[in-house]
Structure formats: structure tokens, C-alpha cells
Length: 115
Image (cartoon, rainbow, N blue to C red; front, side, top):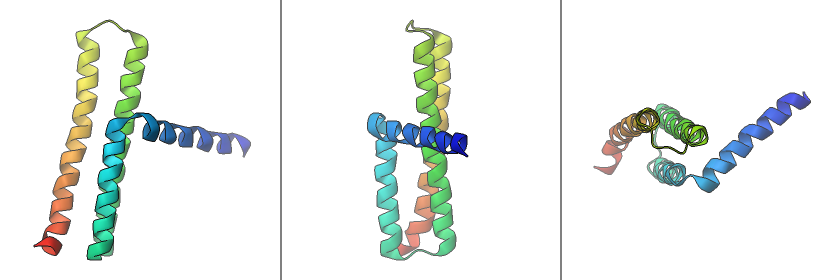
């Protein structure tokens, strides 16, 4: 039980590190706060909330993994290597894909409420 509680502590520490130090994660959190506010304002349906929360979790998780991968690459070497650059760019691309899909989902959900 103690080990499980410690593992939760480590995970929460990681989340707080992300919030404190990663600008892109902060931007995604700000966007999520706006979307949640809009959801309450427009009183969106339960299924729409589920879609918003799932896609938001995906974007935040991808950003967290991207940040972790970038930090790991920076620990491996400070040299400029094409392979490290490619790894970082691919991870950033994964975040971008999820963010684009999140925008599409958001537009699909909120379009009818706004217009």
C-alpha cells in the first residue's frame, strides 16, 4: 500500500513539474480551461463532455510524453545529432496531431452553440 501511495506521489510530482516548467503544457492547460468554461456556459451534452475530456487527456498526455522524451534526449547528449533532432521532432509532431484533432472536435461540438 505504501509503495502504491509513493508511486502516486511521484506521478503528481511529475504533473506539478510539467505545470511549473513546461510552457507548452501551460498553454494546453489554459486552452482546456477556456474549453471547460465554454462547456459550462453553453451547457454542452454529456457525450460532448466525454469527447472534450478524452481528447484533452490525449493532448495533455502527449505533451507530457514529449516533454519527458526531450529531457531524456538532452540527458543523453548535448551534441547536435540528427537522430536526436528527428526523435524530438517526431514527438512534437505527435503532440501537434493530437492538438489538431482536439481543435476539430472542439469546433464540431461548439459550432452549433456559437453559430
